[in-house]
Length: 87
Image (cartoon, rainbow, N blue to C red):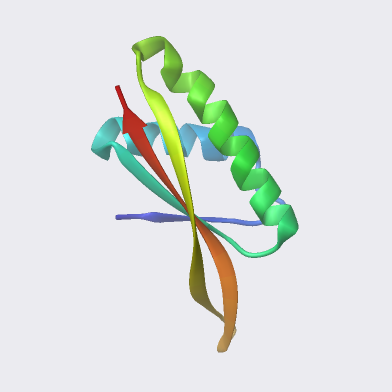
């Protein structure tokens, strides 16, 4: 599965489109965010994506978890958001 890596500069509308596409394709999407700004953009994207898929009768559920991520050879703790479709 492709993991969407979100930064504080990510466009929430673009990320929402990617989430909607992945959910239509495989009923699941996964995002990774490191830092408060990145997490903010990720959560906004989930809210927007819910609006994209709601007219088709699909509800999105977001499951947060911690993730260990390698950034420039350094271990960092990030947040992983698992998005699942429920009909």
